[in-house]
Image (cartoon, rainbow, N blue to C red):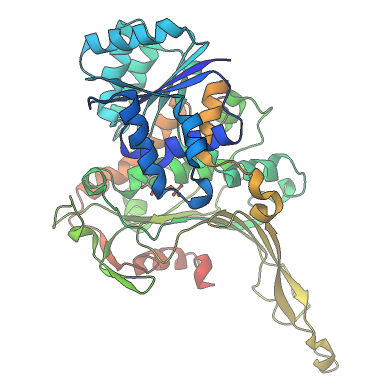
Length: 488
Ligand code: BG6
């Protein structure tokens, strides 16, 4: 099967950091279909040879194990081409069209790794140049818009020229092996399903923490913030994976229908819950790994009075029979204590204690996404000291855990998120991509938070870089009588 992958934003940040390394891994693993071509599109006047050298120079920054040897790069580079385009000029699309028609590949993937405000123009121009054939697939990077209205405008334009089955909306969290294992855990095993409900689960916590700051993306981040950058997409997709009903089969729409139902069931915001159940924070200077780091307002491209949030913690509920009354907590932020993404499912405590130290202690299942990828089941076991227990007193129990490390178990066979998703696009598999209605529902749900913050004079709460965020985040969860996993 031959394919042409056209990378709009071919010299941009995403192409450098994620897409090219992922395409190279797919090439190295032998999973990229033969006869493919990767066409970088950008504004610079580069020859194919210059583009290849540019890409090669960037591989110096990739982990050693994932870096190509000179011989490997030469073979990979043979797939790379470059087309200079001004994305507003019809002639440039005509030029692209002639280069694609000359080869007549079975599949043409248009990957829009550009600023979202260019998406509608690109789609319109592609259609005007008759590049929206039935063999075309279009990939849209997040953020898709900056609110519900802009998201709908993009989706509306895309729908005019492409069918939904041709549209691949990326949320790279869905491509992470750990998230696929979460689906496997829930729907490939019968063990947890009877327990996966309000009768047995006390609360669920989703944490996506990063130790990095905004790096060189200050200007982008200023108009985005953590709510749009992480909550509207990645965190809500994780919440869907945890909360959804078992789909009727593994087809894309069966899965997406169930995720959509979760998003529709999220408890609507009220003035009271917006005040009490959402915390916005911004990092001040602090220390990471023993080194001093600046605060967000001192970062390049950031307004020194900025109120943009770099941290969000919130509490919500899924209002349906399975989950009514169970709090779901989401927390994400930059410059936190570590790079750590995990989900904790806290089960209810035993109803009656016959052992010492059992009162109030409950089991939990931890789904680790990164840097570790695995599962931990926290249980209580009989320690070694029972012989010391006085006659007539109950023996004490100690916490133990079953620990499953997927990296150790599956090792080198693992495929990274972007590699997996790019191969899925080329093969036409939509399971791990987001449908427009899901995306719109997620925007609809976060929008009251954005509106509330716009009219809230208080601004974000400051937290020291290297901490777990503002204390209000712990206070929010403590109101329900719980604490975040690292505090327990
Ligand atoms: C991206 C966000 O979608 O996800 C970034 O735009 C964030 O701000 C990144 O750093 C986190 O992804 P990962 O895979 O490193 O957890």
